[in-house]
Image (cartoon, rainbow, N blue to C red; front, side, top):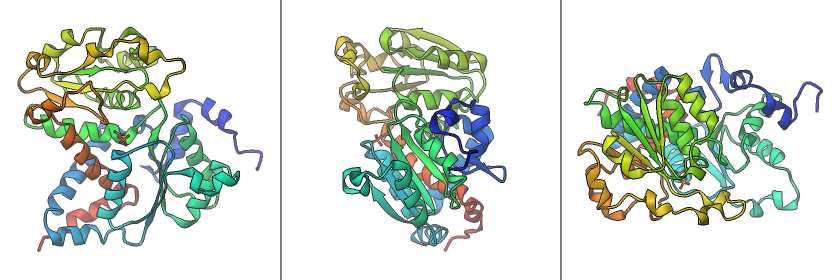
Length: 354
Ligand code: CP
């Protein structure tokens, strides 16, 4: 390895400002790694692209047109942590824009079982594919791979589909897109109260979407969680620096009447070290047919899913429940992101219909 290439530890010790330029090319986002990459202007342009995709794809001719845009490209989906929505919505997004795909979801069926490093596995994928979409439990691992690719001779873009407890930037984009659509006739995302409920310390989606909401003005956030799983001091201080009004509580009941949006989360017990989750009474953070009546009639209910018991399925027919729309929005926002990274999003404007 040439002397100038940093080890993973050295690379991740760098500040965010030092790392972010590695994920850009020609002034545009190239690798999708962290929510901090997305400006408000970037998000709003992407929302327009996703809206246009939705609209055009209603007609079979429109679907044919969209699927011609990246017919010459291939994507690799490398998911070493379980996933349903992120995997399938990225797969569907690739199909919408015409990309062919390959996948490894079980590394025991790949040459990693013969001792191959993940670095070599990813470099192999980059030889065959034009985009790598990955989920891996190790925070910072896909960031480091995006950095290493800069020296590999074949620098294909990498999308972070969830990096351990760290970040889930495309989940945050689809959450923001859902909020944008929910509030577009009600003054937009700014000036509203956003509640977050549950395991807020270890939930990567909450952290990623909170960063993005802080791009808007006059934002209040209420974090309702058991003290063991409250947001980190780092996130709180980031939000305060951005002018967000932050209120932390251990009471869901206190939050319910105040919020315009309620973001529910499940307990993230896959990250337990010594049974911490079992020592918390999570039933206090369940949204039910009874306590949902305390919410505003026009509030929205989000959940990144999967859910367990914190969100009663009886609420699925409540007009405030947006979580099934949220996951479908994920397919469109991810397709929009793929078009953007390959510089093809402007071609949607050339579609004239049948
Ligand atoms: N929201 C989300 O990331 O779901 P999956 O774990 O099913 O991908």
